[in-house]
Length: 265
Image 1 (cartoon, rainbow, N blue to C red):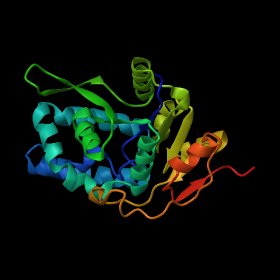
Image 2 (image 1 turned 45 degrees about the vertical axis):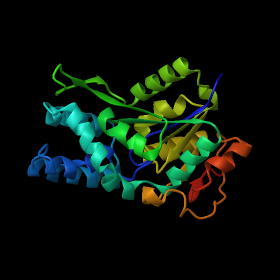
Image 3 (image 1 turned 30 degrees about the vertical axis):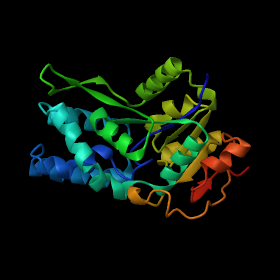
């Protein structure tokens, strides 16, 4: 049976910050990061929230993280994230994203998070948020379970589209009936691979691209404590959908979008 899915980027799409950098404080307390590295991570987080990250910056982050995490124990990192995920992530999750994820589930669509963050971070986050499946960057691990500083798979740019196509082929997902959500121009490949691309809090370049293609644009603005889930979310706010969103489906998918914008003819 062919099914449809909704693919979500994680950082600045579901949560308001970089998922990897968000755990810098806990990593420091556990002895994985020095004070200098913690300060650097904090500055990087602030920059990321304000300006986002382009291709060159993400490549630099990848290289630095590879060097920084070399020798870390895979199991210890995943356990640390699992134990602190509520404390770290709960205040960062967009209420709008939770509502749309819930609507996709109600419509029978599979929800997949695909993030360039390490799978050891993305997996506990996905479980915490009630996501069906996660795809993340896979760091190379040696025979002792330690990070080597290299990557087996980098879930970034074209790599995300490749992973989505592989999942679709494996599980019979109809990509033409599926949705993708992201904030960054670097995720253009994952937006183009589905029939219904939606840009969220887009950077300048992606916003211009979305307007030129009449893709739906959403602004997520309200981080909410996950423990409250949908209970505290007010009544749906009607919005104008882009051409990529079909009539009856649009109302469900845009249930909590505070604002959307489309090109004016």
